Each structure stands twice: as structure tokens, then as C-alpha cells.
Length: 357
Image (cartoon, rainbow, N blue to C red; front, side, top):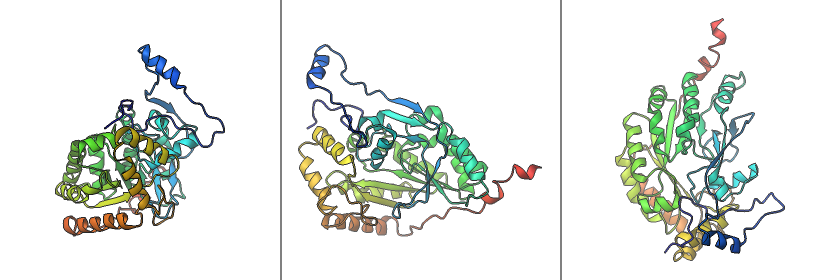
């Protein structure tokens, strides 16, 4: 049974103190109660967009168990509001909190396309796939208006550079024209994030993301267009979506997915407190069971930072999840192969302006 004070349309259920700040503020309950009695909204959770001007845009990924070498994030913070998102902690480096601030204070890098082209044309750049959304979703709602991700894809296409995309937003369908051209030269690979087949589960876990129906439709359209598209069922949360592994694998295989991946939820940094508060508001009767099972996957803690183990967990529950995925892959993806993107075409295109002289 949900709490009556649940904040609709948001994952986090309040602001969180930034651990880098010595001082913090608290809102008095008597003030909030007064506002409610007067018919006023005590909180303002409208999304604001803040333009930033970074000097670089391509990030080197040093974590050995991430599965990518370079990433690019046109936005910091994410309006999707996924309650489990590991990227929440990164918002503290920008001076904001990992709770509501992460979902409502979105930093926009409008100069990202210019920086990307400069990077890809640099004489010392060695071609390697760059993944859009290594931290936050490049197709979050504001992208529909700003089209920064579309501009980035146009540059990847112009310079024949390989790119990967991770998203849970059906807005990617808008760029099917560019994605198809990239695919013709084996320059694109997409991973859709689908954590459940149940719309109610999606709605409370990921409040401002595309519906499950739209994501499955997106998978089918991308696959039909010849764009290699896999699915990340990440994260697996015991007693929330862990029972859906086999049915989800079956459904996405019918829709043309090239493979399936997963991680087990880990509540690092400020996320443990945010997730616990969310459980109190959304699933209070299952709160203790869910937290205890997550802890069982991480040696009695809500988080495990050990490389090679932090994503897959350990213990009986983690082993059961791993076995289910083994069965799912053998049954529904027996011919699964890793897609290797083309890194050879870019070298011939990055100096095309110089060759005009």
C-alpha cells in the first residue's frame, strides 16, 4: 500500500544532502503542514534546465567491468527518475543532491556536437566506439526539444565513426533515418533498457520513462530496420522484477533482440537511503524483504564496490539469478554473438576537410 504523501511522477521522494557540503538545510514539518492547509504546494519539483559549457565531452571509462571504453553524456541528471540509478551520485559533483535534484535539475551541454567533432578530427584520436548514455539517458524528455543527441549522431555519420547507444526512451525512433545509415556501415549498436513486462512495476521504478509497450515496439522497429539491438535487464531487483527473467527473455527474442544482459542492483553512495525511502512510500509491506535480499547479494551490505563482483553479486540469490539468465540465453539466444563495430572507416573521413585543399 502506497503512502499518501508519495510524490507523483518522481522516483526520489525528497531532496538529499550533498555529502560534499558541510552545511545542509531542513524543511520544518509545521511549515509544510501550514502550506497544505492553505492549499499551496509546499514543494516545487518542476524540472529546470541549466546550460553548461564543458571543455571536453568524451569521457575515458576506467572501470574494468563496465563494458565500454569511452562514453558521452549530453545531459547530466535525468528526468526519467529511475529510483535505482547509479548516476544519482554523480550529481553531487555538480553541487546538487542525488534525490529530487537529480531528476529536476538537468544540466544541458549544448556545445556537445561541436566538442565531439573537434575530438573525432584530432590527429591523435584513435578510433574506438563511443557510447551515448554511459551515465544518463541521451534520449530523456528534453531531447525531444533540443535534439542534441540527433546532432551528435549526424556527426558520427558524417565522420563514419562507430557509436553505441543505451536508452529506455522510445524517442530513439525519431532518429531511425540516421541509425539506418550508420547500420549500413556497421557503425551502430543499440541497447534498450527493459526491466519489466509489467507496466505498474515500470511506473513506480522508472516514473518518466517510455511505457513497456513503447519500448517493445521500439525494439521491434529497430531490429526490423537491421539495427543490431540488444536488451539490458538492469538492474535485477530481488522480489521486484527477478521473477520476470525468463518471460522477458522470451518476449524480446520474438521482437528481434540480438541478446540480453543484466546487472544486480547495488545501492551505492546516497542511493541506499533514497531507495529505502522510496520503498517506504511505494512498497512498505515488502520493504524489509527486498532490502534483506539485496543485502544477501552483496555480503550483507546494500552495495559492493569490488570490481568483477559488484555488478553480478554473490551468494545464493545472485547464483539463482545467474542460472536463470544462463537458461534464458540458451533457450532464447542460442546463437548470440558479440557485434564488433567498424573502426576502420573513420580514419579516411576525419581529415576530409584538409583533403579539399
